[in-house]
Image (cartoon, rainbow, N blue to C red):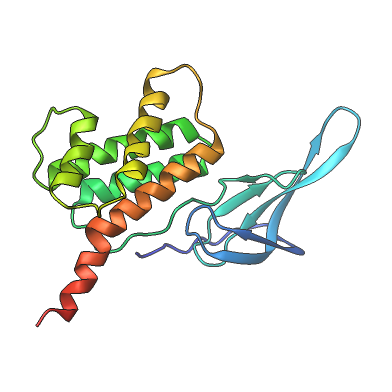
Length: 196
């Protein structure tokens, strides 16, 4: 992926700050930032917008150390052949980095449908039928249906219940989704090189 370099002006040299970039995912220790002042009505606190030295994009860090955008959760999964599935997985990860945990969980649920249909399931089925399809067609190993089904059930709650998904729930569901994508796309493509 090509990243355009941005030449920022009026940057200051500051004490180096370590963080994981919410855009490119690299761990950085940036010593270039814009400095601002935040006030609670009684005191003034410095805040910073640090610049990642890999992708050159800005990360805001407030006086409590909260980062925006925060780092994405879940790893990149190679060899996903369907661009819509890759885009939806990236969307789920980007929602997480924007603190949109419910939206992230809902996107993971939608991925179940997209994955199953891309592997031959009929459209317009229930999400339970998509999970069953992945199991019966051996796209997921024996004994993994419960955690694959957790993507569906947590996604259902995010879609149909008033309660919002927590950060912990979003991390768990993204972790399950990442593993599902690795099982279906990454590992089979890696195994091809061992076929004789």
